[in-house]
Length: 168
View 1 (cartoon, rainbow, N blue to C red):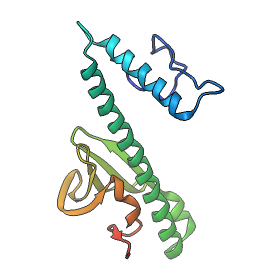
View 2 (view 1 turned 180 degrees about the horizontal axis):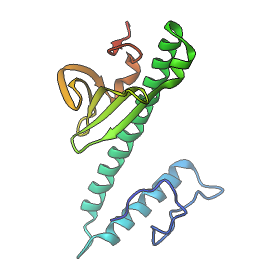
View 3 (view 1 turned 90 degrees about the vertical axis):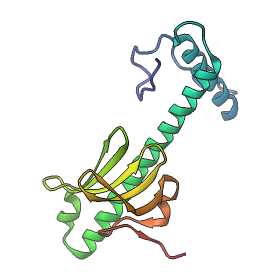
View 4 (view 1 turned 45 degrees about the vertical axis):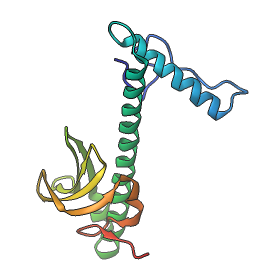
């Protein structure tokens, strides 16, 4: 099956993805690119190509790509707010030592934070729904500590010990 790749120059694809034309609008290019992806999925299916299956697979991959992008945004937000808080209370070298790691799992994506030599579990994100939870212990989700979804990450402050919702 065709997989998305951050490097379009590799030899993974039989046909290179389309590039925008000089006089082409963004909407027209997006439609042309979606058709290229759909056609690629249809060509990769064994037996007779099933357009519905290809479009469902395309939608699933699009949701996964959106979730991955949002998790990256969340990790960067956590790191920025964590470093600001540490720098305001302690020294700058401690803030610079702070790290955030994202670890993908089959059911949950884990976000760990802390200095490189002493990382601690912080959040778990349910892959199917995008819901964000705290943890009971490392790798154990705490469904009672719910911190919104990947669509509501900007409504929370992630720099404290536990996330805090902004007052509206």
